[in-house]
Image (cartoon, rainbow, N blue to C red; front, side, top):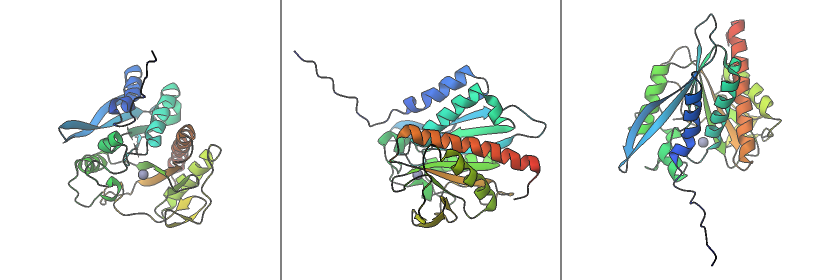
Length: 268
Ligand SMILES: [Zn+2]
């Protein structure tokens, strides 16, 4: 008699499986602190938006606070896996985060991730709802987080199923471009930069897009001075390991570059 073993269904994704490795790092390393940005109810279940902090070695100046956000679109897990990899690397080599307090949000859209969908379960693209008086619970949690944390920089990680390579959005700001261009160069040995002149409907050059959609995850409109903000995109068609590696290289590049700007007192 032949026993048939049916493979485990892909969906619903198990949320615990996503953030368990983060909790394991928090358990093993006192520089990693796992907490919850907020929680909400959907369909009788409670969903949390987890937050993992990494406190890099201190310097004589106050820490630079960066927020890195993944899985705003529930079907783009590469960013969350890249945050997991980055955190693992930093636990082994904390010096790479000297002077930083990193706040990592690997799961911004828990119902979308559970269902394997871009939108949340209510059918909304969360990345079009920010700072528009949305009453979606995920938006409320993340806007509150963006207000209270007062980040010096924000990085959003995404995946694009229509692009030919890595690219990102600078929102037309010099500081963002001065961080994103080196980040693309730092990851280009893993995956190529999208060379097209038009990406995602926007004019692009060497993987950099100045324009952007409205309603995206961004610092509070009133925050001054404006934090840097970068959106980094990997090609969904590429192998997951390469998307993760490329994103991780890009994040490490941003840490090194921005620290350099601060040290030089650059006014960009
Ligand atoms: Zn996305």
